[in-house]
Length: 88
Image (cartoon, one colour):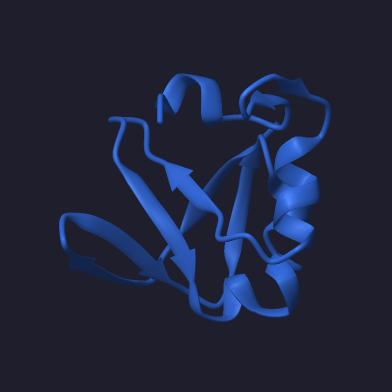
């Protein structure tokens, strides 16, 4: 899927859907972060617990996540317990 169309709070899946990311995250759909250099990391671990409860308030914001990074089949995952809000 096109990364440009699948970022932010309102994104195309396949049409514009208001608050799509928040709705999906609240249902437990795996979330990801896009780094400033364009890399994508699926969020796992405690941050993804309880249907992404710690991630949902920060969707669409710039955050800092520190955690254990792993790679499987070319896909990157970050497992962390918390994130730091950087900006809106």
